[in-house]
Length: 346
Image (cartoon, rainbow, N blue to C red; front, side):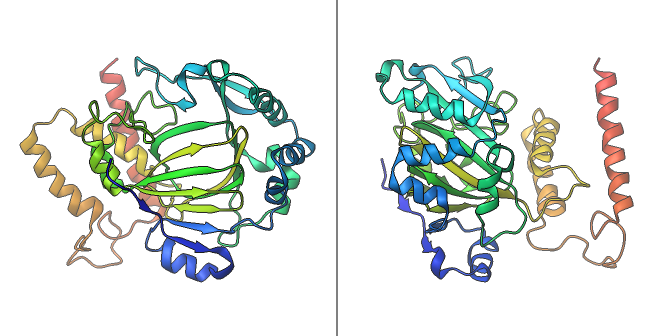
């Protein structure tokens, strides 16, 4: 395996909001932010002991059930697709945080061949732990709802998020492995429709890759950047950077913030557009795909800012700028087009 590079690091005590936005957010550059949550009470409890942190959480649990996944010992904590690649390798439950934490604590004494993999995923911190949500803050964001993840030892396969992400370790430790977006062709991605998390995930174990089965992953590994985070440390992961996450401890807690400054509720998400594009061009011959790729470069991605050249900038058009009403007209057109497809193919 080729050596990996460390992710750039900074310290929250020396990083202002303006510097974060200019140096990392605007440039979409990943960064580890040490001491991001050094003042959080949950982090201070975690630095005392795992038991203190768990008690802190249990005492503040609202007992609202949240989405939780559980898998048998044979997956060795690696949540992913099943062997047939037609679904996940775990069961889905709704459990309160206290039930999850108590089960994780019990699992510590279980032998490895009997230890369940368990993870409460992306639960609303405000719903599960309202008092904790009130007492923590994010110096770089306003009014972004935090989510909480609670698990034992696990390995989350490389995937991308639909929004920018600041993820903070509150208990335990985690290793993050980041791959630039262009490495998608070397990650051996699983099916999209049956993806466990709604976006395609890598079939490769990033920690112990099988290079005989996945030889091109060696190129992804050369571009990989790695960071180890302890309680209080955070990482900024721009969308759509690929990232694999390994949790090392019997009880791990992560609190993260997803946000998208470019989101427009009047238009489809980028992920929806990606799926629609794949559907439209999947069976087209190579020459035509090459020709259409040039049109997409111009009309969709417009990296050289040449779209609308020669047109009045205030013209109401997709090439310039649309009004709210025009966006509705575009969506209406697409909806009618998709509905016609559904009717014609039934």
